[in-house]
Length: 326
Image (cartoon, rainbow, N blue to C red; front, side, top):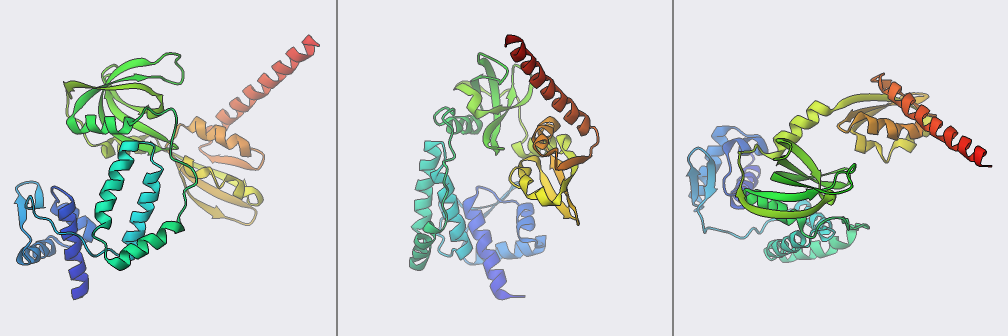
């Protein structure tokens, strides 16, 4: 066995235990791809080194409360990742989250070795984010408010404005989690009005208030909803594009779940696993209808034709009105 490799793994297990309240053996097995026997041996090695490890019955392992060692070994890749995270968080739209991250990062930087501090300073000028990750439509610190409601399991009242409505409608919700997708932040919550789980775009929440009432039911973690919902609503799509113009589709195709392409002599086959409503894909595809075609599913061509015919009719009707006025 490579003694250096084992030492690095044991050190990573220590940092993981120090960073979380409880770590399960399943998590350790998946992360390090080792057997249960090896995990027990590594944990025993930490105990022999003087680390007070506690076995939380039925939960996992943790380090005794109050025991801490400052991390001192960061790899070049880890330092780079921290620097990238700092750049992103500097653009965060929620001031409180940004401020707390900066405070946490200062504590991490304080444990850097001298050469690591120099590396971090040198790398700061290697990445630039031009645009702020902001939206003037977001309520101040709305992410902080929602995360606190999740942590405390308190019902939240929101005034939500759907795109089809003129006035916001009050909702009482039990927040499950937040996620970022397609340029917007979303809240996943159980809606008391609809008696079901719903996604709410944060820029459409016009008022938010955490109530004193506790959650009425127990909710699964957000990743279970997201994984289930995405798998149920995904549509496999195949299109064929003239090779000469295939690069025109490059920038937006990731939004629609682009998974790969097959480059042939005269054209390119592109494959999508689309989680968005298929009509949004069709409306995007209209821009390329003269240089591409939808292969599968064939019924999307019917929607494509309907949208184009409706658009042509609108143009003709407008032209006819203009002619009559003249």
